Amino acid sequence: MRSIVLSIGGSVILSEKGEISFLKELASLLKKISKQYKMFVIVGGGNVARKYIKLGRDLGLDEEVLDSMGIDITRVNAKLLTNILKKSNREIPCTLNDANNVDKPIVVMGGTIPGHSTDMVGAELAEKIGADLFIIATNVDGIYDKDPNKHSDAKQLKQVKIDQLIEIFGTRWTSAGKNIVIDGPALKIIKRAKLTTCVVNGKRLDQLERAITCQPFDGTKIIV
Ligand code: UTP
Image (cartoon, rainbow, N blue to C red; front, side, top):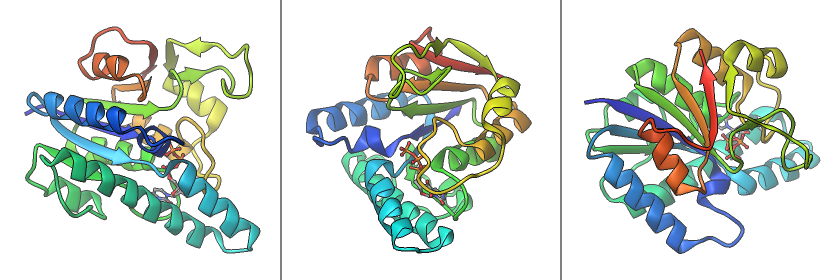
């Protein structure tokens, strides 16, 4: 069976309002897609993780502790999603091997070890299982030439070469709670494994479905 890895931002799962209808629709979409593809969903930490990380950093905690707090929050978000889905695991896998061994149509997990984001976990898993597609569902419409939340004239990139992204963002992990569209270590794996990768707004379920089913979508395709 073909497989898809979906890395979904924590801010998509848990927005300020906590939208019940959105979560139900997301669950229905994932269940529908899982009839055709084995789905691996990696859930991020979002604002809650960032708040803990900021507080911990202000208190002088070391970076590894901040990362591990972030990981804990990703797993709480994953637990919420997996319990809505029902066709998926009950316990959240802590490693890629454990995720790969789950015999369910949908596998949901969060972070693994300190030093990267959940996008990197998604890229690693996609490489490991030879996924057909890697989708990054974030809270903006793809990758822009500058941060669209800060610059009103930011332009969306429909397509971007992986080498161009590496030139801009590098391939190193900078620090916990950074909130960039894709972290450097994930870019390195996307390039190495030649992963077909799409970046889309996870809040726009119609576009998420289009990206997953390889139809034209409003977002960014990364050319590898
Ligand atoms: P996220 O992947 O959520 O980071 O992990 P993010 O870029 O802020 O993502 P969004 O907003 O959800 O899209 C939250 C934090 O948890 C730690 C990192 O510190 C990261 O910034 N983390 C996560 C790890 O150290 N290892 C992991 O495998 C995953």
